[in-house]
Length: 175
Image (cartoon, rainbow, N blue to C red; front, side, top):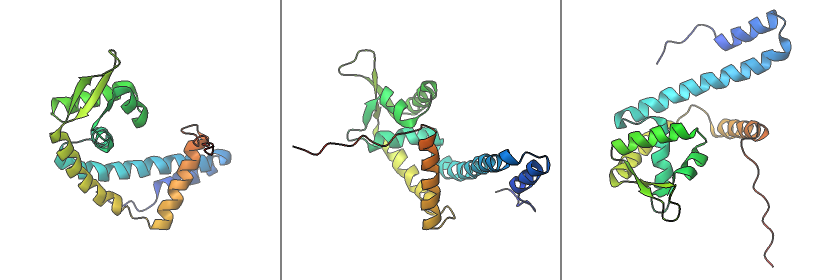
């Protein structure tokens, strides 16, 4: 943990933005730098929790995604879409997990160009242990339930407005 600063540097940055006449951008700069700093703080907590398991958050996410499936396997393309990261990043993550014996690549049963990712028993044990440690972090973020709910709603509205996802199409009533 780093030492506490005597002043909030983001509040000081906003003061400077306003002093320089950038009033129209000051709130946006404050939002961006606040979210980035919150991300840094959260990732530091996650990294500390995952360190004993020799997992990065991206490696954990891949293992957890596979563990959530019924059979512990999914096409690589589906993993890329669900994790919302560049295919090269997923490939690198999978290579490390395979090297450590946590996943294997299998031929796709119907598409000769595609690969299935499969969680090994060792991978399932590792992700279950790591999930227990991460749940301790998730259970105590320092936000009460109302603040956590409000924050998630605000960020979801921002993400939706940025085109990150769309509401599901309505399903017609059965005839």
